[in-house]
Length: 115
Image (cartoon, rainbow, N blue to C red; front, side):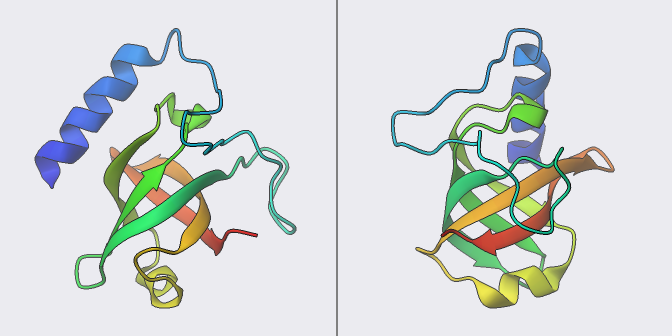
């Protein structure tokens, strides 16, 4: 998993200069307004839960573009800021999430069911 995080981070750094947010082929778009109660600067990204590792606090998401990290659509594992977030989701669920880099790792800060 650490190799996957490192590779994803290298991709982020390499593509940051020229990245633009756009809708992906699978229809997942990250250019959505923030959910109620979220600060205006927080953009949510659509995703589908692929796998959950509650013991390690990791969620694998097939996600759309993540503009604040200049990350294109892909499937990857993310740490979560709070393991309790994982209690309300299961594989196959459509979700919206916000991710930030925490201690050098992309980390899900907010996770909610998609509407």
